[in-house]
Amino acid sequence: MNSEKEVLISQFIDDELNLDEKITFVQEVRTDRAFSDETIELLETEKLLRKQETIVPPVPVFREKKKNFLIPFGISSLTAAAAVLLLIFRLGSAPAENVQPPAEYRFIVHIPEAEKVELAGSFSRWNTIEMKKTDASGYWQVSLPLTNGEYAYSFIVDGKERMPDPTVKARQADDFGGENSIISIGEKI
Image (cartoon, rainbow, N blue to C red; front, side, top):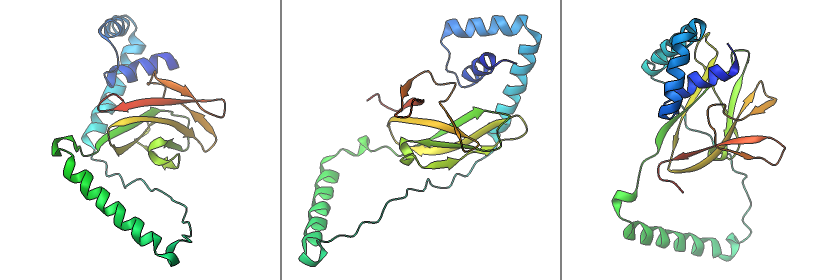
């Protein structure tokens, strides 16, 4: 099965095709027995994935601890008090219906030859997040709570090869000659 067909199957499963692309997909599945069998196999795997409840630990955020030289002068206490007042002011002025809890977003990629797949993106400050292999089908996945916004991300295969999500068309160049995939959660920004 070539990579183009695997991407097409994945886009069909994730409902990322427009109506014309869906029609083309169904016509091709109807005429190509190997393609049809592969599609059914991947749909069965998707059913199993959706039945599993995956408990995802919170994404670790590593921050460099900086020494605050202003503490002896009491400025940090004043800054903390100002931050609390600002927070109270903002919470009091923001309507409650605008506050939305993070939604679970599932990242999934088909790389059967990989020994390890990680995810890195703007949502994790580019720290890697280990993905779990679903079974022998070659799919890797992880679900993360993401708030509304736009995020850039890539998959890291076996600790060395960085690749964008093959099922996401929106991309941007990174600073290292590669590309990152771009997703938008919730309202468009």
